[in-house]
Image (cartoon, rainbow, N blue to C red; front, top):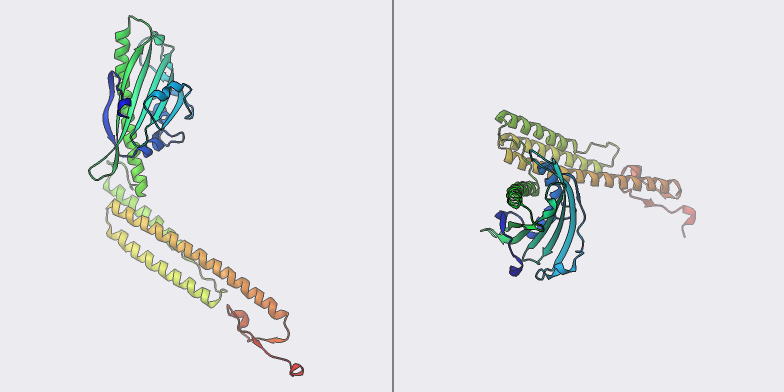
Length: 344
């Protein structure tokens, strides 16, 4: 691993710490189904058009396996149209990139890129090679962290009198690209942390007035409390007494929970984080009440079925005598009598 980290001539990105593990980094940013792929950054931030990525596959060049002893190697092709800010000449350039990813177990990841450009003067004179080094580390508390660094070089394959101009432009644009990409990475990781906590801030913008925050909190409070109240089961007067008792118990418990949470939310004042925590608690309790309601309804259905079966049995058994209230009790008590002429 150490021997494989051969840096190129120029620094595109100084070692930068990211708050994620090695596996999380790959899954979030480089997996074929990653939620924050390179293509997203290229389209939304850089302004590239017609961005196309192939899926990761085995490299076509077997010699790439000589890059140290990686535990896995993958390759993919990328092509896109990149906008140019030149005062003269073409306004965009067709770009082709080959990415090779080398995974060295728990030691880290190397990502090697070779980029070629078409449609601009002297495009056939050079290629851009860059190398990403992704190494796991940890902070003082032991939480997983990564260090990401990138180096690059401009490989001239033909002589050109514009070499210094090409170097200047490529260096400037490469550093700008990676500075923007790191900002996207950090924002994406912050979003993931928010989702992991299941606490979305009530108001994201810092310049929103305090009154707007209070209004938003009250609105959300009313919505979740209404949801909880509506989950209380309704009385079914045709249900057996034991089932009606269960319904009444759940309804009473739900009302008590609603009153308690009303008081808790009112005492939270304008503390958005505390309100968010209480709202999560309300949603959990709502799910539990809904589950109880579902179970009670299922029980009522089974008891009703048993009652119907008992009525059918009673209709077809003339030699049985049963109490008058048998059909109204969940489980009738049946008494047998033997006809006089049958006694022996």
